[in-house]
Length: 431
Image 1 (spheres, rainbow, N blue to C red):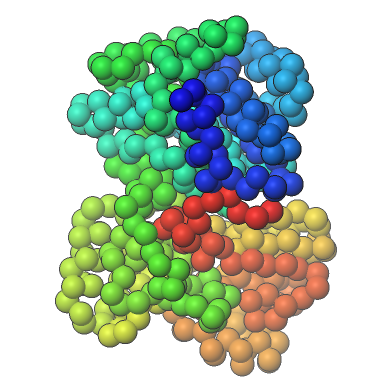
Image 2 (image 1 turned 90 degrees about the vertical axis):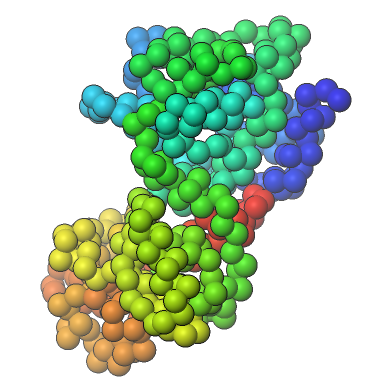
């Protein structure tokens, strides 16, 4: 079976052949991503799918601008749309690989979503998996890449998924394919820099080869579960969508989640992260404490990853922890006409007027219109302070969760994120 035939079933399984949305392909110019682009283009041509080629210039190498220009020429030669993205600003002095990975994923996700793409294809290979195993043997906690996963950044990666169809293929196989196709590629010297954990693992791994510079990252500076990797950390958790309160009940409107009391601790922890809108998963001790509480079977209330977990004998309700207000983490956010923003990692908000600011409800409940004050009583008391309210320049206050308006559109993100993180969405979503 040739290389194209080997990855076609993966593309067929994960992608919608008839979707009008473009497919985003991350191209660094390295051998892995170049081979991926050629293989995906053949599949896309057969199904009349559009491709958007995205290249990130990290600004870490003096040759990076030339690499980006070369990627642009490659895309042009293939008749594909292209967009160059740049990681600008001051770079960290420590944890550079992890910071570069986060910046890359954020840029890719923003560009993909702006173009209407729901899937970004990336060229990780079997060698990347071997290197990750070598890194763990050296004491790192880097997770394995997965064939299908939500974007690892939040909120930039909302509604965007990553597809890595080459994880069963070695770099040498890809390079043989490129040589047979008459193609050449870029070798990034950063892949040989032994200051970074992945480069050291590449040297020690049984499989050797030149990696894609755009796939380099997640070195020893990464945290125990990655900087923002809810989907990597939750790889083993698979929740039945029915465990989330179906219906849709009020929690789905105000950003809460309701689970069965029998839900696994990992699923409850994911729900806490999603309902809180935060990005840093809880640590091992916190997860162990949650597991003990669930096993005990008694009612309890705890905070975890910025979320508040209330459990009784039948159900677990998860919401944003109001303590985050006193910690100064729920910041006011001015709205601009026509611009869609994410407030507090939990609500996507768009407005058609320019005199509104989103704030937490705490301290403003008595300023709500009487009808909204009445509706507010149906929401758990602990969840009310963290609800978003719209404050006009004249001081008028309204809660878009309690009263819809034609000038403001609000979408709670918790359930969508939860379903993605727990594997309930395993194919390209409809546009």
